[in-house]
Image (cartoon, rainbow, N blue to C red; front, side):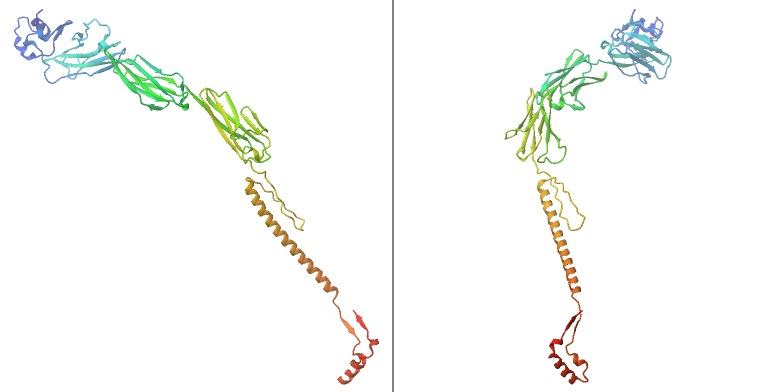
Length: 449
């Protein structure tokens, strides 16, 4: 079949070529003619038969992005349909569908919808080889063509974390590598330690159309990292929430803490007991634990039982620093307890007065030196009050005695001196009688009433 035969058969021109005057309308075509599954390149056609897309396109389509193994749908739509023929071609310019007929023997292509305004075809089980440009052609006058691009995404085949050391020691730096293999396009790898995002260093290798990405993370670990997950997360348009993780295992030396069991609160006083407990945590768990006294020997009356230290009767010679040491395979740690023994508490009652009511004031001492000063002040006030009360009482007693004394010795004296003066007629005679009365002393008497 000659190119001219193809043209006349496709467009309905008679074989005698009487209507070849219409050929200039199809000049400069960029669309090779296809018919019955055969492709006719434009180089095989005379220049008069090359089709031109012309202006005023009515065809509409859109690009398709699909994950490998999924279904891609290609749609060729006509905005202003005039019942022209629509066909779909693959990247090799082979006809997939001509109207509702499928010349291509690839059963993965299935007709979804056909009408005068649309040709919609599905492609199942998409692979990378299906990627490329697919052409929609509309046989109008002049003919029109538009293409859509199918992009195939390939998620990573595998995601693996390799760790330099399965068990690390506190303070060491370890290296972790996360690899995402055979993806398209290349993946982006992100690192997380718990909820905190970290920064790694990535390298990309390309194999044919596939990419392998390896990200390296260098991490300095501490005891707080033991049991914490390190997460490798992939950002890729073909997959969501793809991640893998490894839990860190960190060895660390013991952490030691000394607690006071008794007295639970307050000061440690002379004569009272003291009980201390030592707690140690590490990885591995501490196996050796001991008590000692810093810069001095342990008193003989101190009882050590495992992690407990007991002093039943404190005295001033127990003052000092007591240390609990614990060790494991990683190292040794300790915690100190400083003991200061205070004086025992004292209670001093104030002095009483002659009244029948007495008052005793107890004093609780939290610090021995502060308690002694308070007791002295209390004694001073009590003594002053007692002295004042005694003085007042003595004065009252003295007043009572003096009163009784004066009351008993109060009286009137009557004498017979100058008794003759009472009978005298005048003063001179009274004086003479009085003088005469003094000579008669044996008659003088006193009366006490």
